Image 1 (cartoon, helix red, strand yellow):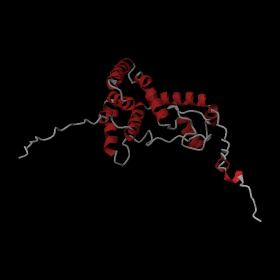
Image 2 (cartoon, one colour):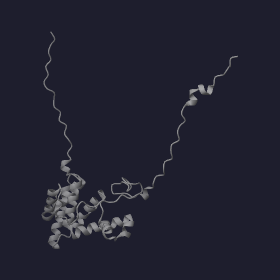
Image 3 (tube, helix red, strand yellow):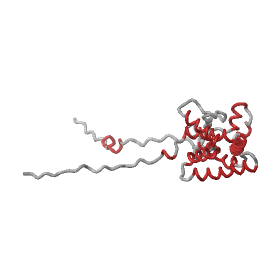
Image 4 (cartoon, rainbow, N blue to C red):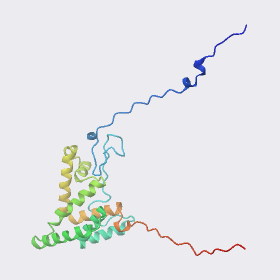
Amino acid sequence: MADNKQPNHEEASPLLHQSQPKSEPPTPPETPEFLLGWTADGLPLGHGSVVGQPMGRAPWNSSICACLGQTDHFCSSDLEVCLLGSVAPCVLYGSNVERLESAPGTFANHCLPYSGMYIIGNSCFGWNCLAPWFSYPSRTAIRRRFNLEGSCEALNRSCGCCGSILEDEVQREQCESTCDLATHVFCHVCALCQEGRELRRRLPHPGFNAQPVLVMIPPGEQTMGREA
Protein backbone atom coordinates (compact mmCIF):
# COMPACT_ATOMS: atom_id res chain seq x y z
CA MET A 1 0.00 0.00 0.00
CA ALA A 2 1.52 3.22 -1.13
CA ASP A 3 1.92 5.98 1.37
CA ASN A 4 -0.01 9.00 0.28
CA LYS A 5 2.20 11.71 1.79
CA GLN A 6 1.01 15.18 1.30
CA PRO A 7 3.69 17.67 0.31
CA ASN A 8 4.99 19.84 3.03
CA HIS A 9 4.10 23.30 1.88
CA GLU A 10 6.24 24.88 4.59
CA GLU A 11 9.37 23.26 3.18
CA ALA A 12 8.39 23.93 -0.41
CA SER A 13 7.66 27.61 0.04
CA PRO A 14 10.83 29.62 -0.72
CA LEU A 15 9.49 32.66 1.05
CA LEU A 16 9.82 30.95 4.39
CA HIS A 17 13.53 30.29 3.84
CA GLN A 18 14.53 33.89 3.41
CA SER A 19 17.09 35.04 5.93
CA GLN A 20 15.70 36.99 8.77
CA PRO A 21 17.07 40.53 9.18
CA LYS A 22 19.91 40.64 11.67
CA SER A 23 19.60 42.98 14.56
CA GLU A 24 22.25 45.68 14.53
CA PRO A 25 24.37 46.13 17.66
CA PRO A 26 23.43 49.14 19.73
CA THR A 27 25.52 52.21 19.03
CA PRO A 28 27.32 53.72 21.99
CA PRO A 29 26.04 57.11 23.11
CA GLU A 30 27.87 60.07 21.70
CA THR A 31 30.04 62.11 23.98
CA PRO A 32 28.58 65.58 24.53
CA GLU A 33 30.46 68.36 22.80
CA PHE A 34 30.94 70.33 25.99
CA LEU A 35 33.02 67.45 27.39
CA LEU A 36 35.37 67.38 24.42
CA GLY A 37 36.55 70.97 24.18
CA TRP A 38 37.57 72.62 20.94
CA THR A 39 40.72 73.80 19.24
CA ALA A 40 41.02 77.04 17.26
CA ASP A 41 40.29 75.28 13.95
CA GLY A 42 36.96 73.94 15.19
CA LEU A 43 38.15 70.36 15.78
CA PRO A 44 37.33 68.67 19.08
CA LEU A 45 40.23 67.97 21.37
CA GLY A 46 39.41 64.27 21.06
CA HIS A 47 40.06 64.41 17.30
CA GLY A 48 42.98 62.12 16.49
CA SER A 49 43.05 60.58 19.95
CA VAL A 50 40.82 58.56 22.25
CA VAL A 51 37.38 60.12 22.31
CA GLY A 52 36.97 62.28 25.34
CA GLN A 53 40.70 62.45 26.07
CA PRO A 54 42.29 65.87 25.41
CA MET A 55 44.95 65.88 22.72
CA GLY A 56 48.22 67.20 24.09
CA ARG A 57 49.64 70.41 22.68
CA ALA A 58 52.93 70.21 20.85
CA PRO A 59 55.99 72.27 21.84
CA TRP A 60 57.53 74.82 19.51
CA ASN A 61 60.15 73.54 17.08
CA SER A 62 62.78 75.84 18.60
CA SER A 63 63.09 77.77 21.82
CA ILE A 64 62.77 81.51 21.96
CA CYS A 65 66.49 81.87 22.68
CA ALA A 66 67.62 79.78 19.67
CA CYS A 67 68.20 82.87 17.55
CA LEU A 68 70.62 81.14 15.15
CA GLY A 69 68.17 78.29 14.56
CA GLN A 70 68.92 74.60 14.31
CA THR A 71 71.42 72.52 12.36
CA ASP A 72 68.94 70.99 9.92
CA HIS A 73 67.92 71.65 6.32
CA PHE A 74 66.31 74.93 7.47
CA CYS A 75 69.65 76.26 8.75
CA SER A 76 70.05 78.88 6.02
CA SER A 77 66.44 79.96 6.47
CA ASP A 78 66.99 80.34 10.23
CA LEU A 79 70.01 82.58 9.61
CA GLU A 80 67.91 84.70 7.26
CA VAL A 81 65.22 85.01 9.93
CA CYS A 82 67.82 86.05 12.51
CA LEU A 83 69.24 88.67 10.15
CA LEU A 84 65.81 90.10 9.33
CA GLY A 85 64.83 90.23 12.98
CA SER A 86 68.00 92.13 13.88
CA VAL A 87 68.03 94.59 10.98
CA ALA A 88 64.45 94.86 9.69
CA PRO A 89 61.86 93.43 12.13
CA CYS A 90 59.08 95.08 10.13
CA VAL A 91 59.97 92.91 7.12
CA LEU A 92 60.11 89.76 9.24
CA TYR A 93 56.77 90.51 10.86
CA GLY A 94 55.12 91.20 7.50
CA SER A 95 56.58 88.00 6.07
CA ASN A 96 55.31 85.97 9.03
CA VAL A 97 51.75 87.26 8.71
CA GLU A 98 51.83 86.84 4.94
CA ARG A 99 52.85 83.21 5.32
CA LEU A 100 50.23 82.67 8.02
CA GLU A 101 47.23 84.23 6.26
CA SER A 102 48.19 83.63 2.59
CA ALA A 103 46.09 86.58 1.41
CA PRO A 104 47.03 89.21 -1.19
CA GLY A 105 48.21 92.50 0.29
CA THR A 106 48.87 91.00 3.72
CA PHE A 107 52.54 91.92 3.77
CA ALA A 108 51.98 95.63 3.07
CA ASN A 109 48.95 95.88 5.38
CA HIS A 110 51.04 94.68 8.33
CA CYS A 111 54.55 95.81 7.47
CA LEU A 112 53.68 99.49 6.96
CA PRO A 113 51.68 100.00 10.21
CA TYR A 114 54.40 98.14 12.11
CA SER A 115 57.04 100.44 10.62
CA GLY A 116 55.06 103.51 11.70
CA MET A 117 54.69 102.27 15.27
CA TYR A 118 58.35 101.27 15.32
CA ILE A 119 59.46 104.77 14.30
CA ILE A 120 57.08 106.54 16.71
CA GLY A 121 58.07 104.32 19.63
CA ASN A 122 61.80 104.78 19.10
CA SER A 123 61.46 108.52 18.44
CA CYS A 124 59.19 109.41 21.34
CA PHE A 125 60.04 106.82 23.98
CA GLY A 126 63.51 105.68 23.00
CA TRP A 127 62.61 102.03 22.43
CA ASN A 128 60.19 99.91 20.43
CA CYS A 129 57.28 99.93 22.88
CA LEU A 130 54.31 100.35 20.51
CA ALA A 131 54.88 97.75 17.80
CA PRO A 132 54.64 94.73 20.18
CA TRP A 133 51.05 95.69 20.99
CA PHE A 134 50.33 95.49 17.27
CA SER A 135 52.25 92.29 16.52
CA TYR A 136 51.50 89.99 19.46
CA PRO A 137 48.16 88.66 18.04
CA SER A 138 50.16 86.85 15.36
CA ARG A 139 51.83 84.76 18.06
CA THR A 140 48.44 83.86 19.50
CA ALA A 141 47.18 82.91 16.01
CA ILE A 142 50.20 80.66 15.41
CA ARG A 143 49.79 78.97 18.77
CA ARG A 144 46.09 78.30 18.19
CA ARG A 145 46.42 77.18 14.59
CA PHE A 146 49.10 74.56 15.21
CA ASN A 147 47.92 73.67 18.74
CA LEU A 148 51.20 74.72 20.34
CA GLU A 149 51.73 74.99 24.04
CA GLY A 150 51.90 78.44 25.59
CA SER A 151 54.05 79.88 28.32
CA CYS A 152 51.75 78.76 31.15
CA GLU A 153 51.76 75.17 29.92
CA ALA A 154 55.53 75.25 29.47
CA LEU A 155 55.96 76.48 33.05
CA ASN A 156 53.58 73.82 34.33
CA ARG A 157 55.51 71.13 32.44
CA SER A 158 58.91 72.30 33.72
CA CYS A 159 58.28 73.35 37.31
CA GLY A 160 54.67 72.36 38.03
CA CYS A 161 53.27 75.87 38.58
CA CYS A 162 50.14 77.44 37.01
CA GLY A 163 48.27 74.16 37.41
CA SER A 164 45.06 75.77 38.69
CA ILE A 165 44.93 78.16 35.74
CA LEU A 166 45.17 75.36 33.19
CA GLU A 167 42.10 73.60 34.54
CA ASP A 168 39.72 76.23 33.16
CA GLU A 169 39.88 76.59 29.37
CA VAL A 170 38.78 80.23 29.22
CA GLN A 171 41.07 81.30 32.03
CA ARG A 172 43.96 79.40 30.47
CA GLU A 173 43.50 81.11 27.11
CA GLN A 174 43.36 84.55 28.73
CA CYS A 175 46.57 83.81 30.60
CA GLU A 176 48.27 82.53 27.45
CA SER A 177 47.27 85.65 25.49
CA THR A 178 48.69 87.82 28.25
CA CYS A 179 51.92 85.82 28.13
CA ASP A 180 52.03 86.30 24.34
CA LEU A 181 51.86 90.06 24.86
CA ALA A 182 54.53 89.97 27.56
CA THR A 183 56.79 87.89 25.30
CA HIS A 184 56.52 90.44 22.50
CA VAL A 185 57.06 93.40 24.85
CA PHE A 186 60.14 92.09 26.66
CA CYS A 187 61.61 89.70 24.04
CA HIS A 188 60.19 91.20 20.87
CA VAL A 189 62.90 90.34 18.34
CA CYS A 190 63.40 86.85 19.73
CA ALA A 191 59.63 86.24 19.58
CA LEU A 192 59.47 87.33 15.93
CA CYS A 193 62.39 85.05 15.06
CA GLN A 194 60.85 82.07 16.84
CA GLU A 195 57.55 82.62 15.00
CA GLY A 196 59.41 82.95 11.69
CA ARG A 197 61.28 79.67 12.23
CA GLU A 198 58.04 77.91 13.18
CA LEU A 199 56.11 79.16 10.16
CA ARG A 200 58.85 78.32 7.67
CA ARG A 201 58.87 74.75 8.88
CA ARG A 202 55.12 74.37 8.71
CA LEU A 203 53.83 76.52 5.85
CA PRO A 204 55.21 77.23 2.36
CA HIS A 205 55.46 80.78 1.12
CA PRO A 206 52.27 81.91 -0.67
CA GLY A 207 54.33 82.66 -3.78
CA PHE A 208 55.02 78.93 -4.21
CA ASN A 209 51.33 77.99 -4.13
CA ALA A 210 50.61 78.94 -7.73
CA GLN A 211 48.14 76.74 -9.57
CA PRO A 212 49.57 74.60 -12.40
CA VAL A 213 48.94 75.94 -15.87
CA LEU A 214 47.51 73.56 -18.46
CA VAL A 215 49.37 73.96 -21.74
CA MET A 216 47.60 72.57 -24.78
CA ILE A 217 49.80 71.62 -27.73
CA PRO A 218 47.99 71.57 -31.09
CA PRO A 219 48.30 68.35 -33.12
CA GLY A 220 50.81 68.18 -35.92
CA GLU A 221 49.92 68.88 -39.51
CA GLN A 222 48.10 65.96 -41.07
CA THR A 223 47.76 65.03 -44.77
CA MET A 224 44.96 63.03 -46.29
CA GLY A 225 45.68 60.82 -49.28
CA ARG A 226 43.15 59.82 -51.94
CA GLU A 227 42.48 56.20 -52.65
CA ALA A 228 43.31 55.02 -56.22
